[in-house]
Image (cartoon, rainbow, N blue to C red; front, side):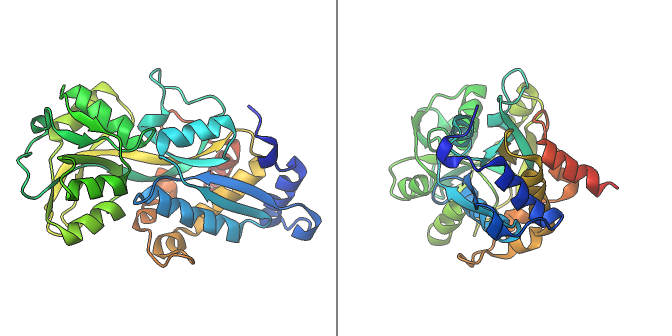
Length: 319
């Protein structure tokens, strides 16, 4: 599927822009700028924060490339925009990306695995919801529509099965609704810690509900993208360590982006991890999830193939 005309840089411009980083090709003034769009996530989500940091550093480190972020509802929405040609890059949880037959969506491939998200089930400290089955009949935020949270939380509820009154709210909206008593619990599939839950926990006592049995059910039913995990006691103020399930996140790219450009993007991600994790220029807030980015796990994208440019970068690191 071709990119929309207004998003499509000339192939020569893209190759020369990426080549400027790799082999010192023609000066940038001789080519048109390459404008790339990166789909991130909603307000209060790690996707929004880490996507902004990635866009900033790619713009700084890849000559001729300018990356702007596109807010979204997260994983499923990002996949839709990528396939439609509305964006060039996007973040997605691995479970939302893998088709039921284990294949990847046509036209998309991975730059790398970035970090793992953990499924949070958050309630106020005084809630009577102590275990997963207690969600029966309760008002629960399932995350924004087309988000990774929606995708995974619906799978979790079906595994029970638990029948709940589902609401579709972003992370920031969910935290506000939980605080105000408009919902009884909120799911959030996100990095640890995540801004919306951190802010809520700093102002109001909250708890995380253990998800031991749902985690085991997901691992058994959908082999590959899930692993049992622990949200540490250091994550949120006053919240003890809690068992849950983890899902890897990947940076996706359209297959029709040139190999040299994706090679340069991959190189930027892995050679500037510390800078990305520490802070971004426009927002001094650190991105701790970026410390998980490393070459050893970066290549582990399950059944989602690496883009040829990314695969070439990983091959070169072994030499």
